Length: 336
Image (cartoon, rainbow, N blue to C red; front, side, top):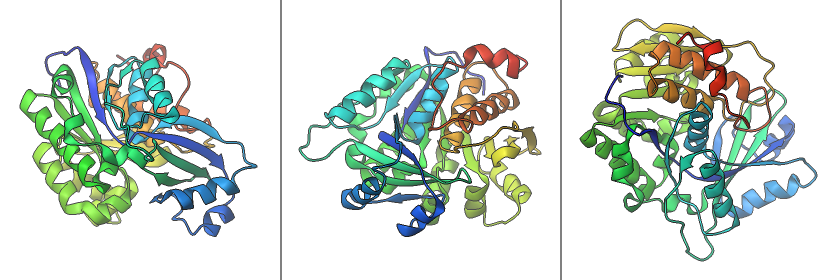
């Protein structure tokens, strides 16, 4: 993954959402007939019903969205970059922009001023088994278009990072493809996460095409691999994924991950034993740690070690991301 050092590490693109995290019992998820552990797109009235039921619960707010959380993990590791995502010119949008910039992530995507279309929100329901169920109203996030893609910023970064969640709407999907195409043209590596198994069920052919055409680094978890590869065996799926991209990170919960480089034998990288209380953002933190490692001189295995560590810290707290800088711990975790 070595290449000429550029001024910034990663150009991330994703749904810009304000996360609203709450702890609930399994019955709450069942009452609303939600797919436990998955992500459900919903209209404002249904999301409002859920929030109404949560009025007596303690809620935790943070600017988020999958790729944005990854970019925060990158920044907390000591990395730098830009984030491309659409917010509205409202209170949530202003908070979102300010929050990203305070972490050192450039956020220059023009705010939308369309009346009545707010910044997107995601209600994150966390059950006692630490599983998270996402109830998402994308709001103006679906207004992301190719016009929001900044080719000059991409060229300043070593890598671009795209989340699969953007495939649900045509404008963001085309913006993603432009980021991938532009990255390839200017020599910026492309990293892609499929994001969720339900997306593979709908966009498998498109995902396989963009992975084959553009992807240098692929992120996938065990459930997504089963859907993408069609096998129940984790080991078999690892071998299949190894043939799809030059570098693959296949995560397996508390067991850690496997790394497959250039279709070679998968290498297991152990996770960390922790008391998990909230799995929100674990995969995003892992990707942030890996991206930092890959763009700052680590081998793929070392990057995976750092990614596993960040994920272990995130599941130990409430919410999708850490609230502290982590870069000074790298030397304790990774032998670099």
